[in-house]
Image 1 (cartoon, one colour):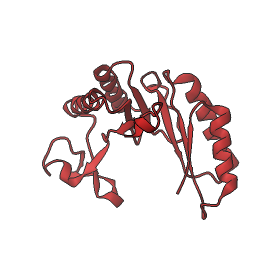
Image 2 (cartoon, helix red, strand yellow):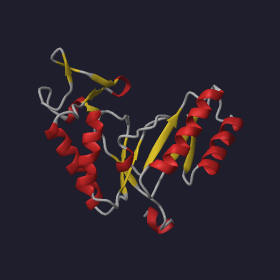
Image 3 (cartoon, helix red, strand yellow):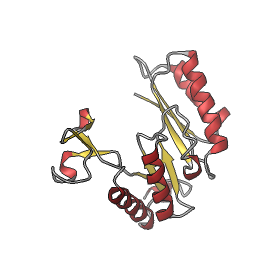
Image 4 (cartoon, one colour):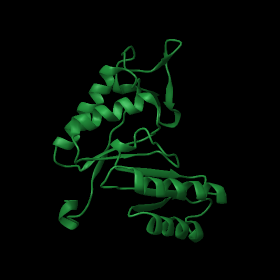
Length: 193
């Protein structure tokens, strides 16, 4: 088991709330987000369709999934992808936090964006930053990482990910990512493709 190799390991489970494979629910289910009566594509490459997390019954279901994940004893919390700061996600994260309590971690992939409305419920960001070709974008990432380190709920678990452009040997971008994570946060970094 991983914890035998590293007892300090933090394990999070991704909780899909935004989209799911077509096989997740029957075609006519009320939890599919629809436009003109048809399910809305959420992630075309994976054949995924959007789920309607504005639906209170679906939000309650997601909160119960989060509770089951935490109650399993296998995970320290959850990760929510495709995060933004809208009314529906605020309602969702409130329900999740109420269901799982104060101690479990909630990490959200907000990319380079700040989410002040949902900050009090989140322990960290997964900053999935792939457009790292301009100095202005690097500044935005740095500002968001600093903000997350001071504004999100403790304990904070911020993770900075950048992608290489053209080669896995992109050492300058790899070093910039690592340096930013080490100097602006107590978090983690990932250099990816």
